[in-house]
Length: 253
Ligand SMILES: Nc1ncnc2c1ncn2[C@@H]1O[C@H](COP(=O)(O)OP(=O)(O)OP(=O)(O)O)[C@@H](O)[C@H]1O
Ligand SMILES: [Mg+2]
Image 1 (cartoon, rainbow, N blue to C red):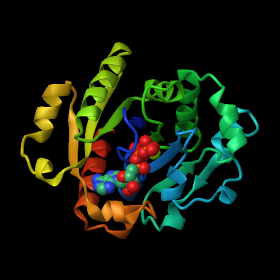
Image 2 (image 1 turned 90 degrees about the vertical axis):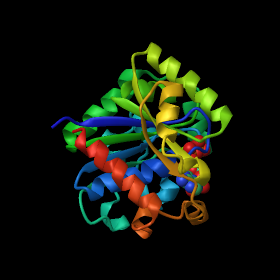
Image 3 (image 1 turned 120 degrees about the vertical axis):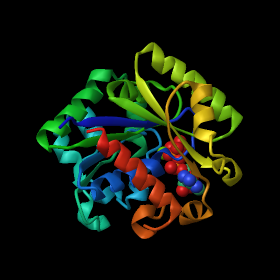
Image 4 (image 1 turned 60 degrees about the horizontal axis):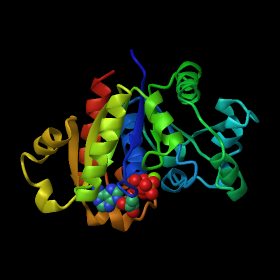
């Protein structure tokens, strides 16, 4: 069965990339898959917060691997049991939260092959089905390289006109590189999310398939990234939509 590498990306910040990564990865694991999530937001990591992984739990980070201080599998943390996920496996590769290490990495140049190599190693050595990169927003180089190295990207977007015009630009750029991308509308105002043809309209405007339109939920925001929302509120509409998305991705293998 093919193994899939996905970059969760967005043009603007705060569109829900890390929240989507954590919940979608968990949902894919719950469907029985082996999933690895990688925090590639090297300058402002955040995924570890949602997974409740403290720096002390990370013996090695992606930074150590990038500086050849360890093997890739040394930075892989199995968080399946800690999170109480009943099926599959969920792994996390964190990046450093040390200011000096973040500053050091900001001076580096990255290439697409490096990220491709990371995904391939995980797929071959740990038999991972889905590698998911959580990225930094916008068109910064490390993020772009991760996006280019993935099989496809899922671009999260709010229904704000600044997001829509920026996302249009992002899609045009990715198209220049021949990259496949899908859109996920997130935090849609509830009255817009109710429109039956919202996804269709946005898909027509931006020229890419829309995987779904998730409304803004007070409960998700109020949860304040304290954990993986779908594990604690499995019957919430947000969780059901994430599960539906996971089933779609699962059917693509
Ligand atoms: N559908 C939603 N409804 C309500 N709040 C949401 C929803 N999705 C995400 N959020 C909240 O929005 C905030 C930003 O989400 P998140 O950190 O995942 O965004 P991000 O794109 O990763 O941000 P950054 O670009 O800074 O990395 C968080 O407080 C999160 O809980
Ligand atoms: Mg983030």
